[in-house]
Image (cartoon, rainbow, N blue to C red; front, top):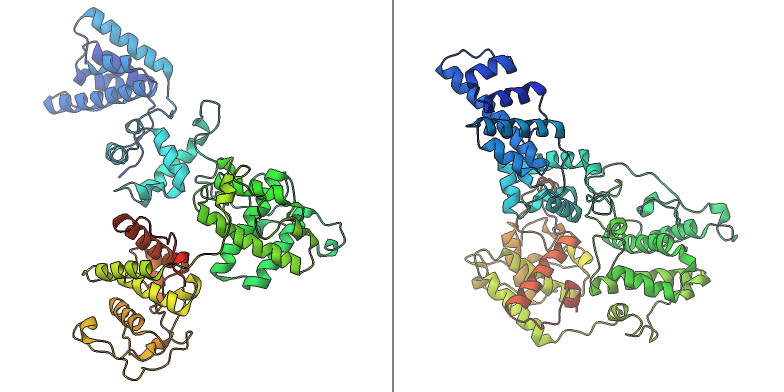
Length: 536
């Protein structure tokens, strides 16, 4: 499929040919004279010549629409003139259209004017009627916008992205601002730069320059680069520089560093309580969005942005917890400036001064009532009985193990029988035959777990085609996807790690989806709003 329509540019000879046609000259005579065609002057040649002229006429009609001249398009569609006056009107229309020349794409143009009919139809079926709607989707989802449009694949999506990039400078809003955000499709590699108010765009932490070692502790270090050095030292000390915890901590710290420098012209050591209030308001509504927000993109490309949008209250609380850990570490390691950003939010954060920030105040989680958790698990059990209940069985096993062993999602994603010190089969702890069909297994790696948890894990392992009591299973991840997603990356990961489990992000997505369905179908007031709330 050719995703883009050919460029609507016409030659003087083509205009002359259509002009002769609308004046009544037979098509079989027009084409050889004006278009240098070798068509024979017979019936077949006449039919072929007419097709050529009608195709030219259709391109001129499209050009008229691109210029917003529906009146010229209607005249050409009416065919050759039947009177001298009618012929003159059509000749004048062609002359005006020739003077207008090649049209540039405009935001209000319909997709049919610039893309092939099959592709335009699929865009319209997804409510993408104009180029402006296409820009909005690309700004929201990045260069992978086509994944949200049924029956459009990577080949067509890449071709359209290339076309959008070629015409990026043409698309302007009412005030001259580009309609297509700068980060969309921007694959230019990033270059290291110094953090400061003059930084042209936010950069990931690893691209920000650190303070010279000789200047640290002397008072001569730049406050911006000194903050970069402090954050990197904190990450090395607390996360070993790898893993999902490292990624989560780095994300929150680099957001604060960038915001402080670009929005407040301050370094990390200069932030105070008022800055904290401002930062909370920023997380709830990042502005300007074109600078701070964008779809996920590789950290080495210019399309990268620190945020994908406004953070929910739960995400704001998480950010505060991480930053509190950063400033506690700074205080413990001799940075007196850390006292300017207290680890906890006090009574000074009133509803009158910061309603959104007060709502995001981190407080200790109250444990969920056991009866509400039992009701949720009972619903999962009932859903798991269906033949396609694999995801429900995985979620139930994960929650039972999560609560029994008091694990974090990161720990649960990599938990194995060996890592949890689960020994051989417990005496007299076989699983009921009814729970495993016709196969009765003694849960070899499940000693030390409650019977319900072992049973749920064994059923989940059956979904994964793993032998619960088989040899070498002590290093298999206890919770993993029953089937690999239909993507090349997932298949490669399954081939490389056949006994691997969910990533922490995948596990979070699974449990979050189950919680959302439960609230929609059974209990809208269920207190657990995120998988974190399910932890014992």
